[in-house]
Image 1 (cartoon, rainbow, N blue to C red):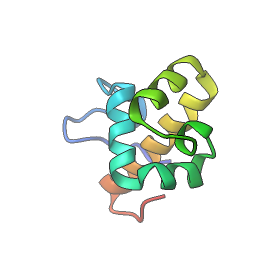
Image 2: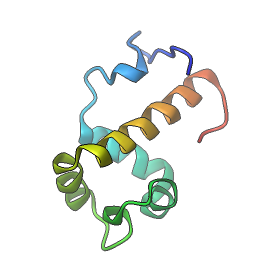
Image 3: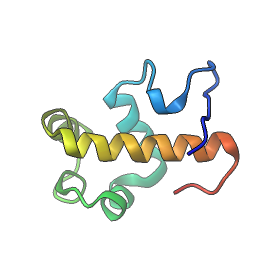
Length: 86
């Protein structure tokens, strides 16, 4: 994956200053909970999904948080480089 930088000049893959809540809000705005469930297959996106319950799950489950952060990095990188979104 190429080293894409955000508007502030920070590497996107480093998630500099980006909170989990910001990441989740951004992904929900782009994909919705249904789209996130299709891409990541996490129950927090399919069974009574909400931002609050998803944040609680993701903060307690490192492997799930890593999947969400990876999707965010891939999406932001694709946007910055002008590629189709994942």
